[in-house]
Length: 175
Image (cartoon, rainbow, N blue to C red; front, top):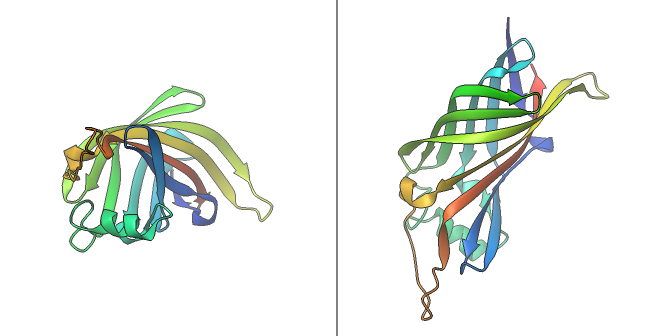
């Protein structure tokens, strides 16, 4: 029997980190996103994940930087308003760990990616809703998705690193 789950946005967050000047990380997040999961019963080891995030909702805490990220130099939000992920395969590595493979689409470019999910389990909240929680981790090279803007300082330091570390804390509600 198929079970449908929907992300609980009030108890979820989707973030990223990138090296700045190769000496520190800058963090950001997406404020507007949606995710659904389809499972067999409550078994996430064969789940189908679908995710989307609104590029306009990107937030790094600095409005000028957010504007630059939304511009054609990076995400080109005007022409590519969303990024999406659709899973193609889920492998259960152990009772707490899933490997979720799928296609990530950013700025019109699709590439295969693999996320590791720390599956925290299923619980019923005080309102009687059945919820499932997990932490997703992964990394991509932004250059592979056409986010190729770069600058180099006078000393030769790259301003923005190519590797983007992705992290999401997700809580799903059984529908």
